[in-house]
Image 1: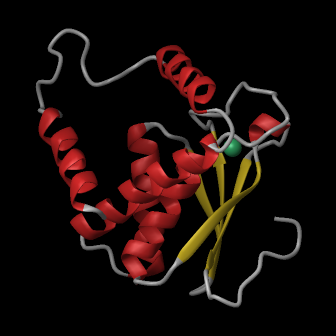
Image 2 (image 1 turned 90 degrees about the vertical axis):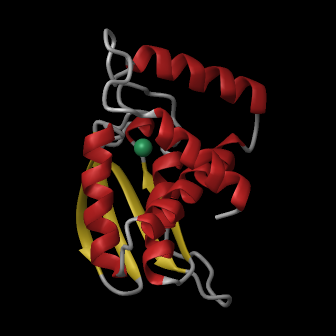
Length: 172
Ligand SMILES: [Zn+2]
């Protein structure tokens, strides 16, 4: 994680005191979040998905290092826990090996309720990739194979260790 990013993450963490916002508390309505996201999409235009992926990836690497996560299982356990705690979505680990993982997600904060014919969960995909990379020291890439916003029943993420000779094959 680059020093400027790390410092920004630390600032975020320092801002999150136990008594944050005594009246309104720690939570935010999805309507506010989605309007902010929609504005970012309009402003950033095409390629916004990779920006959200990158944002998730950086925070994933940072959290993996901060919590000393080691290995694929610890990365995925943490992902499930933090996604539920922060309400990003309800993750479920479907398949795990040292080189490939498959996860599903229900109730995505970015996709649930949308029917727009495209994938919307780039931040979460990047977050999972960053956790895996930070916890294993290997290069991971996570792709969302199917999304609720495309009409799928749940979002599906496939993560793979990235070797230089790798190409994505088979429907991703
Ligand atoms: Zn999705």
